[in-house]
Length: 541
Image 1 (tube, rainbow, N blue to C red):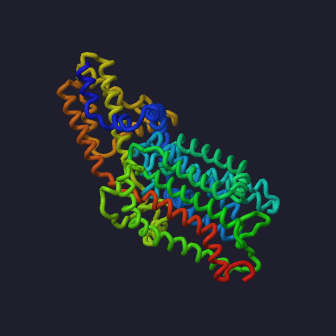
Image 2 (cartoon, rainbow, N blue to C red):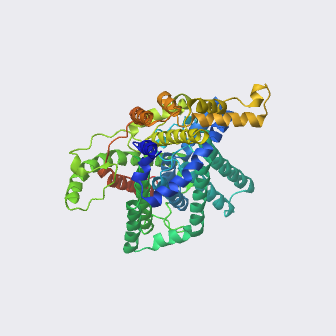
Image 3 (cartoon, one colour):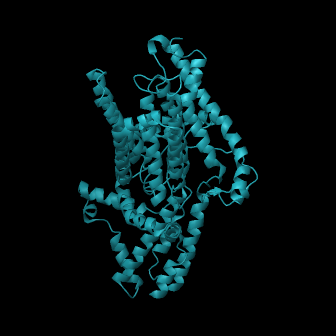
């Protein structure tokens, strides 16, 4: 038995991967929560099968974009330019906090998404499946926005009762649609969306309770106070946990950390300038619909969006050229802040043109492809099987768990390892329920049968035949175990070879994102409003 255990443990990279990559205080909670993720997967597959239709596939694939970073990054600047600076700052606070802390938790515990198969994943975002599953950032964003909107609607007496009720109903529908859509699309489990929703509600509660206090502090802050604010944000970025796999959560956290830096600095500086209104809310961008008219308003919005994209297109390549030499000097001084999945400046001479390297704001060249996918969401968005390293490791780990359970069950039934006994037991375990044999079965029994079917699909992924044959080996002798270990290793190679390889990421990208997104936020809060006024697109023109 000792020899068998030693062979079972040899080469099981799928099981040892997270144990070797994570410290115990992160690994143990992960292992405690992992059975819950696995337990809910068959129920999610059953629910998906019952609900799926072409119309719902299209609806949830499209509406999922309303909970993404890209959507909010395009919409939020418009709030500032249309005289709602306080609302814009509040939205930035809750969304940036949601993206950062949900990404922080994802990289902390590295919990996978529910397995596919049996689930089919419906998504228009290629990067979404590369992240860990727990908690759902979409759910965090949607619920935080909805709760914040409901708070504002309940404290706002300027709207008519009918309009107020309509907007509240839209808020409830928006959050419910995004959260349920994550389940329907097979991207998250119940656990992911529940905790994600609770996180979003908690973040909004903090903003609703202390938002005015934060704004007052920013508007009256001294330079040293703003330095402390920026330093605190940078420290949060630095302590973001290292993931066990190449996960893009850190990139999103850096981007939104830059957004917060730009918004806070821009709000502070703009509120102390002659361009901002001081009443009724300090730091508000001057705006008056009646005196400006639709033409001026639309011109402001189009010009503002173009300015943001132009800043990104120009500043990003400049930073990627300027920063690497500086990083090499810093690295020689021993002051570099390395990240596991980022190539250090001493390891490359130049950064090539990067494609699909931004999960928040796409490049201008990517917009046509994005619009095309919007027109054909279902044709392009359904996938089955592992899509990321985390998916692959979870598929292999669950496959190995099932194999070990089979070994344990065989020895428990017949410690001598009699092949006839184990085969008979196995045949009986796979026999049809009595209700099916008699031609009559209750709905509950049918549901349980379907759940068993989905459970048997878990951990299949790619190259399943050799693994299943190994799992059915009756004797599990030392010789057979060696073959199984070799098969396991070959299965891992085959699975990982079919995954899309993560692109190379460079250390200079971290600071580049901070600068680029700080600039985007500053343009939204201060730069573009000053530009509008200079070009005669302000109030009274």
